[in-house]
Image 1: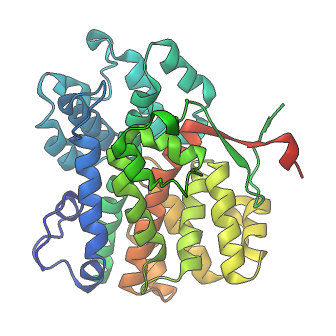
Image 2: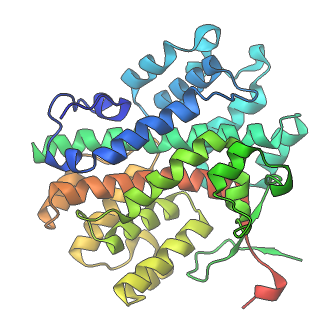
Length: 157
Length: 196
C-alpha cells in the first residue's frame, strides 16, 4: 500500500508502513484531508494560505518537529519569518494573533475567556477566531501522531 | 448566573461558547450541509454551530473523530477513552474530561479508574496496563511531546500490540485537537436549571 500523507512522511513511514497503519488507512486519508482544510481552505477568512503555512511551521517548531516545520515554511512566502517563535509578529500587525496561537499551542490549560475577549477587542471576527483554533488544534493532533508513529516504529520494528 | 466549572467531574457540564455560534437562520448552504440540518432535524449543539464558522474543517473532522474513537479492531473503546481522558487532564479540558470519563465508566461498568484519576491525579493507583496507557498519553500530550521509547516499551511490556498502540496514539492525539477547541472556545458551566 502506498500512502503519501504528511503524517506518515513526517514519521518516516513511507513505502510499506506496516499492517497496523494499513488497517487504519481511512484515518490517515482523512487526516490529510483535514490538513488541506486548515492549511489550504477555499474560504480563508482573514488568514491567507501563506500565513497559515507560517503558523503551522511555528507550531511545528514549538513541538520540536523541525523537518515538518521546514516543509510547512516553504509555503509561507513573506510570512516565513513568523515560523521562528522568537518573532512576536509586531512588524506584521499580528502580535495579538501570535500571542494567542502560542498560548493555545504550548499552554493550552491556561487559556481562558480573556484570551478570546482580547482577540475580539483587537477587531478579529468570531469566525476568524474559530479558524485560528482549528488550525492550531489540527496541528496539535498531527504533530503528536507524527511523534507517536516515530516511537512506535522504533519499538515494534 | 452560571458557574464555570474548574474541577474534574464525570457530571457533564453545559458548554457555553465564548464566541457567537452560527445562527441557523443565516447559515450558508455549505454550513447546513455540514451540519446535516434538515427540516425535521434542526437541533444542533452550540458547539457544532460554533465550529460551523470553519465549515471546511468541520466537514472532515466529524468522520475522522468517529473513525478514531469507534472503528472496529485494535484497542478497546474504553482504553481509547482513557487516552482521550489523559490528554484532557493535561490540557485541563473539564468538558472533554467529563464526557470521556463518563464514557469510560459506562463501557467498563465501573467508576473505579476515573474516580481514582479525578481524586488522586496522574499519580493515581492504576493497574499496570492502564498505567502504561495513561502515562504514554500524558507524555504525548505535553508540548513538545515528552513520550519516548521507554513509554512505548512500557506499553509493549503491558501486553499492547502494535495496532493497539497505534489507536492509543490516535486517540490521545485527537484530544490534543478536541481540547484546543472545547477548552479554548467555551466554558464548562452549570446552568441554574441543571445544577446538581
